[in-house]
Image (cartoon, rainbow, N blue to C red; front, side, top):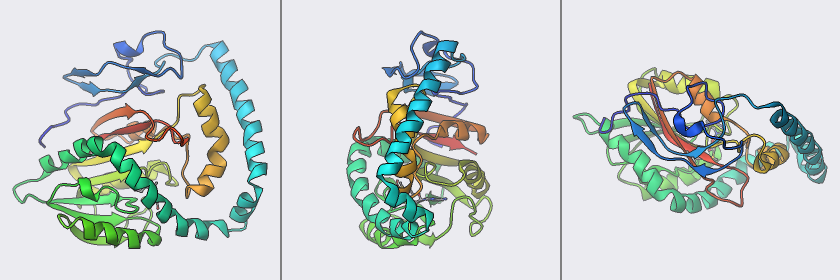
Length: 311
Ligand SMILES: C[S@@+](CC[C@H](N)C(=O)[O-])C[C@H]1O[C@@H](n2cnc3c(N)ncnc32)[C@H](O)[C@@H]1O
């Protein structure tokens, strides 16, 4: 690897069961969003926002959280009533097929915008793939929950891409992205969920990429187990995910309020997942991530985490 990840790197994320680094030991409140210093050291390269963590919430914090949870449930009910037809359709099973059909169009629209905003960060992240190429100058790359092929333009030449997504309606968009990115080799499009990638052999991938996927899967834990199974030893999982706002913040309350409805509109997308915990629990040999501000302030998707995990 060009830039080896040597040791675990646990970012300033709520709830990590790790020793609290100095910049997290201040008096900041849950929900505070301060730029934390970027700390570089032998065992840590971490950047992001600070949040109070590493100590349990006190009584008044717990009380204020539970008051906000109650308010969230009331507002949730209100939104549920306002969007009742949608929920009834979902209950009767007629919403999902519709959603699977329009969602690729929605993603195609959003992807163009988010790629413009994230261009330099994505280039930086996926630029590291080149360092994983051996003498053959090739890597086998699994694009997990590939969607429209949003990341193809950022992969370096020499990638042999396997696309995987449970929604076959993305194929049309994938084909277009493939035609626009002829510097890559495309192996196949597997229509399957990340929780069960039996079509892919153990240790068959050098790289797995998942962007904005763990929010939508049924079980992040099972998907990460499958990612580890298909990666070769030393293979790298690159990720970029939106995550829950800090507990106790108004932004988190709105995520809670909108989540049940958002899930139907966004094809299963959950707003309040603390995905960093799943990554930490997955027991990769090395984990590195940074926290980023929301890509779009007008969406409730919240902050993001970006990084890599080594098998
Ligand atoms: C928000 S889109 C992101 C697409 C693409 N990765 C991107 O960055 O634009 C979420 C994607 O995850 C896919 N997905 C949903 N459930 C999944 C699962 N269980 N396993 C793998 N992918 C899944 C969806 O079909 C969709 O393509």
